[in-house]
Amino acid sequence: MDPRDTAPDSWELEEDAEAPAAAAGLPTAFAALNVNAKPFVPNVNAPVFVPSFLQASTVEMPASDGSSDPVASMEVAETAAPVENGGTEADMTTEEETWEQKEEPGGGEGGGGQEDQGTGGAAEDGGAACKEEDEMMEEEEEEMPMPKVAPAPPDAPKKEHVNVVFIGHVDAGKSTIGGQIMYLTGMVDKRTLEKYEREAKEKNRETWYLSWALDTNQEERDKGKTVEVGRAYFETEKKHFTILDAPGHKSFVPNMIGGASQADLAVLVISARKGEFETGFEKGGQTREHAMLAKTAGVKHLIVLINKMDDPTVNWSLERYEECKEKLVPFLKKVGFNPKKDIHFMPCSGLTGANLKDPVPECPWYTGLPFIAHLDSLPNFTRSSDGPVRLPIVDKYKDMGTVILGKLESGSISKAQQLVMMPNRHTVEVLSLLSDDVETDDAGPGENLKLRLKGIEEEEILPGFILCSPDNLCHSGRTFDAQIVIIEHKSIICPGYNAVLHIHTCIEEVQITALICLVDKKTGEKSKTRPRFVKQDQVCIARLRAAGVICLETFKDFPQMGRFTLRDEGKTIAIGKVLKLVPEKD
Image 1 (cartoon, helix red, strand yellow):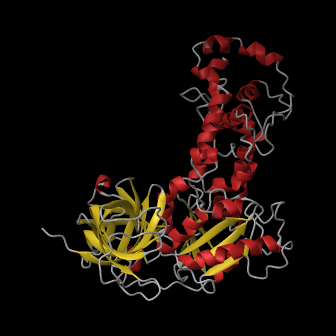
Image 2 (cartoon, helix red, strand yellow; image 1 turned 180 degrees about the horizontal axis):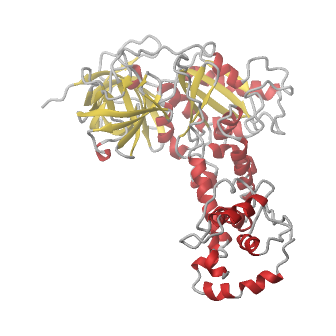
Image 3 (cartoon, helix red, strand yellow; image 1 turned 120 degrees about the horizontal axis):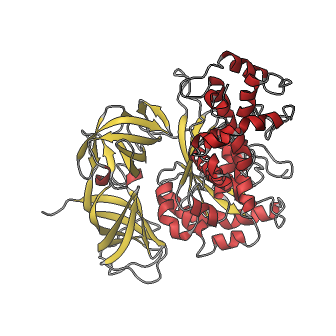
């Protein structure tokens, strides 16, 4: 029986032009073969390695001494008749096995999870291609570690959605704490983290591996700085949390404002390490600016996590903790948080995970609940689900239609509902609804949604647009009166001053066209005369005019869409609230 008729002797030969010549010399090779050689097992869990030519030989010389898989030889015996395409079924089965085996030694990584991802096609090019393909695979895996949340049984009461934004100075450990929480609540599995740890070690950044769960793109990982607002979810017994991991670097404050505008609760991360707390807190540091922006963005409750308590310079010392606390309280009070009700301090360590889920033995002086338990025990937020629909858009992209992301501020949205996109007044229809990447039919206020819309192109949407219910549109316009507090500005501010306005998720250039009056900080009295200028720490009422039409509401009707910040030259200059909208003079 000519071996050429039975089966391709190995998958490589099929593709080679010289295959027939090689095949001719094979019978002699068979004779010299050591049939009793041990099967090659590169991976302990891999299936036993049975080279395909051994199988062909089992047909010809059954004296294989049980070295080949008995099942395989049985299959061969049954299907020894040549199939039309020249390969027997058994060969097909083992061909798949050889793929995996081939990939193992070539992969260069030798392990991980390659055997369950039979990625064919790259093995011929040797290890390099394998490695690339593995990396591709790994990247694909990384993208989607999220929807691990088991869908709740339909009768279970819906958990309250809470959005938590992590803010604080650059390198305080925001992403690391976020990654650690996801690990402790089981949102990132151990294997993924071990992979991050290995990759981080290769870059000599082994303390960064936890933050990689949230900093997914290459630039963020190389520099160790968050740029975009990372998102992830975790659940406790009573609540469903969305982590918004804001960037700490001052160049990315606009991104941070977008993140904070979606949050219900802010976690201000402070580094207790000697020198780091001070730089974060001094004039140019981000600790102050972030706390202030969070307050303006409408975050009512603030948890201050004093991180890096395990650092050798700190070593869980109560003195250092109290020192940080003493410096922070007066400042947070000035920003508008009530130290008794709105602020909660707790020590922790993001890298070791101490006091995030379980209390710490090294820290006997802290008696409160650990962080995750504390989040779970917070009182519920009051939200009106019967109000008009308001969904400020954070981001949009194309994916089988137009997809928008945002947090539903009020009202509720269901599938197939007709909504209006302001300020362009496009009527759109909701095709599908994802709440935190889990598909639902309807969503209530406070949830982070992805909506797929019909009736509008992705190019026609900008972040800062708002989805409204058709019977109750949100207000849009260019001119409005607002009460402004000047926080930090070296010179004076006069009419004609330009700045960048951040209101809900919208960013627009504005000009102060007129100063109407000054407001006394203590008594709230308004001055009778128009001021000619305002300077730092003064409160005034001014008329502002935006470069384009923006959506906004007055603060008293709808606080989330009526508060704003003004920024200029990379600094936050003023915070304010919209008092009234001025109709355009046609």
